Length: 212
Image (cartoon, rainbow, N blue to C red; front, side, top):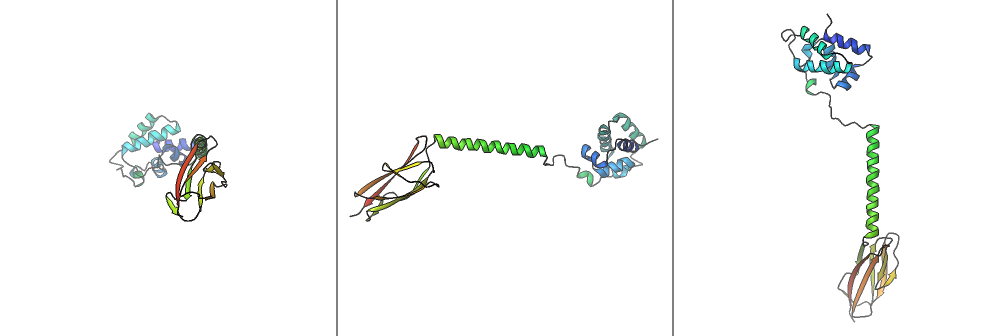
């Protein structure tokens, strides 16, 4: 009478499946499949697990699991074939191992493009409706000087218009600006403004004292 291993092996070869293909489909390691086909039960884990292997293997080959288990029970006995747990059984084929496939790569790429697109829209929205960024590097506030001229410098957004006391000054392509201002009073109030295309304004004030 044929053993359950012989039945499985004959059906596998009949359908031209390799052990690697069976391993991949059933998640049963190849060395365990080989032992099962050869009837080497001493190389396999306890009977409960062997029956699970037979069910999965039989299901993959589209065989009747009930008949396969009946054959197994007739040929197997714990006394004749004492089970032995293999090291390989404690490390079965990983089910959750991540593998990069063309579909996953494409999905990741599309998701990345969508994120970039919405980030671009968000920044554009902030640029259009929000007040522009403005930083005045010099002069510092409440500074006192004996020189009648002071240099106003800083940076803003390249598209913004910058004014000092309502006088428009040049802004370079990186958003930086430098302008020399003549001090005419003992107390000079400098109002630096940056205006966006949408008309939003950011204002910074500096007070410079002129010692005479």
